[in-house]
Image 1 (tube, rainbow, N blue to C red):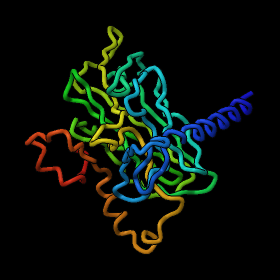
Image 2 (spheres, one colour; image 1 turned 60 degrees about the vertical axis):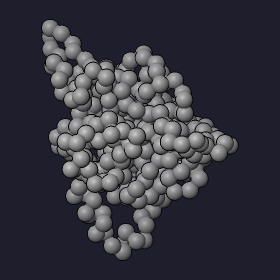
Image 3 (cartoon, rainbow, N blue to C red; image 1 turned 90 degrees about the vertical axis):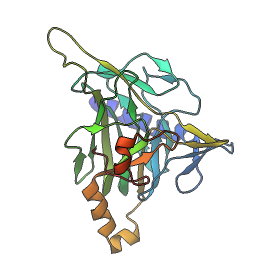
Length: 275
């Protein structure tokens, strides 16, 4: 029955969340220890909160693009599922760079996840990985973030850059759940029609990048927030309003050079991302 199926799904979500915690252990702020080792992966929450859930791949793990993206960390008390990839864009490719998708123009599928709790929690931002193609430099991305009280979506294509480590979307909402969809496409790919289906290979970077021995920058998806809205924001929401006007931000990959034509729009680790 439908009710039985939903119950099984809920149990699966909780089990997935519980078992995933064995890979990453929260070590304070945005830092996570890999199991019982001294290796640290940093998943930045520059604009408030801590990672409540993280989806991605393990260090040096071969990525199987035919599978959904695993949950690496889930804060106690929260419920989440694996990050699903729509069948329409899934591939069977395996590699060490990220999740490979075959996408039409306009996009015919997305990656998505849901994070929830049995009581409201506060979300500062949602982070997405860069989308890259070896065959095109005109990759564009889009997103939809749904909370109890608001929906956030980019109104125009968001150009993807190789020198970006993550794109964040400001949320600043109290909610009982957050549903996120992420998609990308190649603007140079012909539109599909009755006479042909045209696709481009695009990979979403989901593997941690080595910065120095035992220290990695995290790539993938994560939600930044708190169990409840911080008192400092309850007292003064000026910061929230200022950021919400900008809609989104970049984290830069310090190992990648920024092309001269884009340097004027980059301000440290923070810039509007609709360039």
